[in-house]
Length: 310
Ligand code: 3HC
Image (cartoon, rainbow, N blue to C red; front, side, top):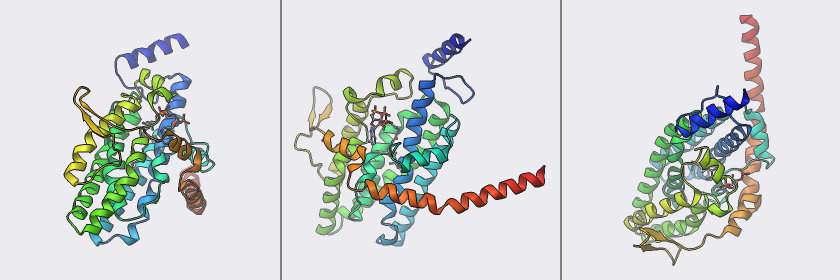
């Protein structure tokens, strides 16, 4: 009976075990997993745009090769995650339609412009660093396919984060102009990176349920704090500062105190009014349209091989 199925689901979660595609799940669990994984996949695909902007203008062949590899990784993460949504009955064509018509979200962070090459390093160091903070706990998420996808993705994100930090270290050992370029990029990306973790716990409609279902293992504020604590020592090694006068170690708490995030800016960017939202979504829409012939050809080929096989 449905009651037994519900009991089995609750028992699996309470034992910290994995929910697999064949298992019965409450409709709310399916809905929120599709929502979260689809928006994560959309973030990976949209995230290729700000970084891709510098592939043709990288300062050396080495930097170009690294950036190319990173952007290709992001594409792979997106496709991996769309496959995970399909285990929940979602259709990736439908998800793309929701993305390009603004009915599904992607991470706010990719709505900011990449103005100098230092942005490539800062995105690797801070944005991929924040992604790692947020995604390592998701390796223990209750939904099996998502948790397993996170293990592979986190390994590749670590490469992304290290290459970003190394790129910045190189620039910080360069000219004054290069050091200023790095600091200016850090000033632009620090606060938007903190927004990646989502609204404060008190304004997060999904966190309580996601924690109860062990989809999320930590709240938005806990992970944001972990990211700040991790980033300050790295900034000191790099020789840059964060644009927050209230950032300082609090021995009592054993954490860094930091200033207030501009949640109005967050709401503006999430609701489509960030610096680059229109161009990011339009670019994705156009790319999807331009790729229609490939999908049609692949479908025609699949039909032909099925006819031959039949
Ligand atoms: N940008 C856009 N929307 C955001 C957001 C952000 N930074 N933070 C929160 N939101 C949205 C949520 O999606 C939710 O809207 P919805 O109900 O329509 O989906 C609303 O704001 C309220 O937020 P909640 O905290 O209640 O939502 P969640 O419990 O889903 O928490 C989250 C938000 C922390 C982003 C969580 O969904 C999550 O951990 N997702 C998986 C990781 C992920 O998607 N990371 C994206 C980072 S980009 C990336 O990893 C690419 C890499 O290459 C850098």
